[in-house]
Amino acid sequence: MMKIQIYLLQKKADAFYQKAMDEYLKRLQAYAGVSVSYVKNEKQMAKAAAKGKKKYYVTCGEQSLTSPEFAEKIQDLSVRGESSIDFYIGYGGEDDMEPFCLSSFTMEPSLTATVLLEQIYRAYRIMNHQAYHK
Image 1 (spheres, rainbow, N blue to C red):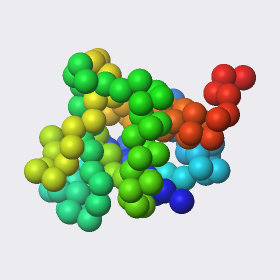
Image 2 (cartoon, helix red, strand yellow; image 1 turned 180 degrees about the horizontal axis):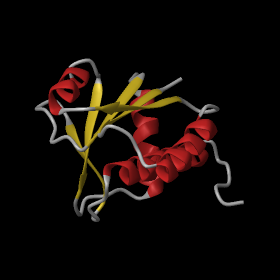
Image 3 (cartoon, rainbow, N blue to C red; image 1 turned 120 degrees about the vertical axis):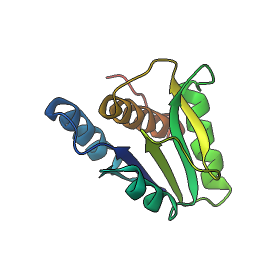
């Protein structure tokens, strides 16, 4: 089972974002081990980044993926033997990190994490040939 860790450079999320993130974390339990960690400063973020294997820093820009492309990316990483993926939100990145564009919009870190969790959930639904919308 893939392990996905999301690091936010933020003390905590507003309650409404946390509620949404908790819902997606609950839904994702069937597919992958996904967790969210709050990091207080860049020094702690750099320390967390030193531990990860496949690392992405989440950024805004024009090179975003479609949901099926994101699902394919996760599937490809899994097929190549990657067992963990780390996403860093609110952090400029390290030399060994790849940029990951979630949207061309600039978003608050908790909103970015919520959207990322929703897209991870959608990706696993796509990979498992399951309908997303009820």
